[in-house]
Length: 408
Image (cartoon, rainbow, N blue to C red; front, top):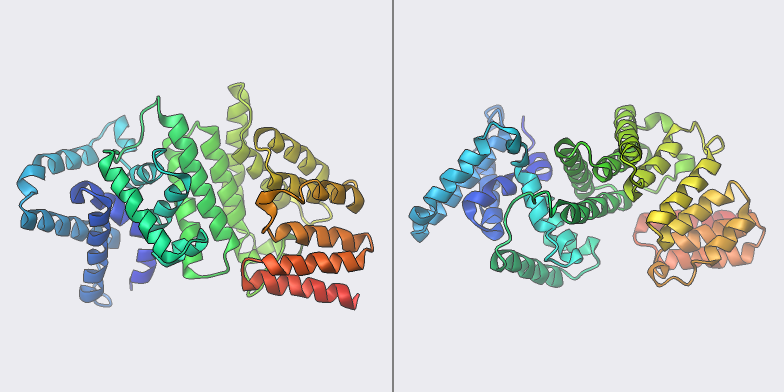
């Protein structure tokens, strides 16, 4: 029996993407996709569902788009264009690999003419299929604000004549960087959220998009690095997820997905070796993946190669010098040079504006202070972390750490 909710969660973006060419714009494509899912809900009977549910939904959505054009009297004007689009879709030559509808939609939603925040919002809503209020919550926006920004972004795509296409070779590097950043943000949002169907959809979307990009651009180190990072991160999902947060040192490493680990290792190795072979600097995604890989190769926190991690963070700081990277390096340093040396590094980023509401900063500071026996300061740092924590699971975890500190 087909689970229509799961099909919606996993394939909404593909149905919308496959309908855009026929519909003519994003709003109409979304409306047609929604109508297709509604019709499926009305007509699919247990045991009688179509063998290819996504194909059925795409055909239904496109037929609805054609009906809309006929009613509006625009079908005759658009018929030659629609025929050409379908011919392109069936083209059997090397260029046909660019005709992945979902990727074309992603490149459109991530167009540099749009502000970065709008690119992420469009991808979450249009590609991942998240309801506008949910997407708004991920970006700390009011639903009405998010809806207005979505409308503005779609209007800009239409008014500027932005094509639903993968860019050419000259424009690809800049456009690709924007796409990778959005996929990374989607993957990060999934990692940071508590378990839910929306979280599952975010994970599936980021993994699918990264995998598709790697199939189309198999020599791009940045793409392979991002794929490795996504796979390594999601390999730990089952072990990390619980009613409350399970940090790396408490996870059942036997629950890590071995297939994702192996695929992540292969992608990361190709990314690093490819960059070095071409005399290029290894990029941020490949280095982040390498860092995740060191953790995944270790049998325990105690046997982790922490000096290697410090060296990798040093390399990462060269290409991506952010306060969060410096904070993460400080954590690795604590296992090499001790809590006092690490605390000095943490204090060096404590006043960074971007970390002001970042609960991980006071939480790390609290752990280091506790190790140094500065219990009162540690308790104050934990209370600060609790005050800025992003969700209930984080707050429960931090309150437990604070309670353990007091009882100790």
